[in-house]
Image 1 (cartoon, one colour):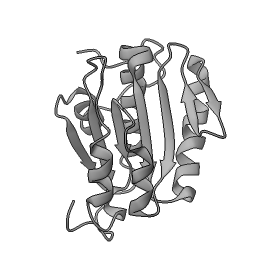
Image 2 (tube, rainbow, N blue to C red; image 1 turned 90 degrees about the horizontal axis):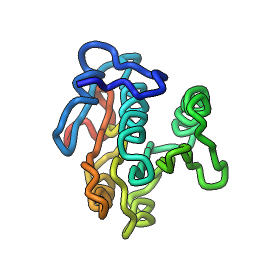
Image 3 (cartoon, one colour; image 1 turned 135 degrees about the vertical axis):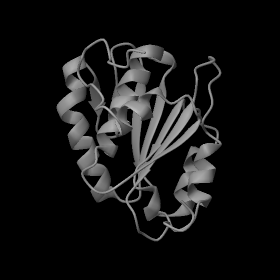
Length: 169
């Protein structure tokens, strides 16, 4: 299976990144030490999903803090414009030429996840899941992973060893 987006903007490394983007399982956890390519794997997975499903692809990329979120937005800012995606600063959302959209959010409190009740996302990425002390926040988001257009949906979580949520992850 070729997992390279048509724009050849990103290619998964052999091993965990390739396994991530090829995995048909609904919920996948990609763990490992810092610098192991987890965030790039999530970004690449989104690029592939967006290229495949166009306007029916709707993503949400979450982190625990605004500081962490800013770094990921900066990283996508070096890649996504190369395929014509445009960023809306106020909404923290990228829109791709084919209509695919991915929003970035931080969830400092469990109650922040309630803001997404009723939303429909075909992909949700939870970066650094081990920073969440309990699974409740992520469970609330899981209810938003669905597609009225029949797009295969999924959740992708990443995390480093340790952290307040290490025990439940």
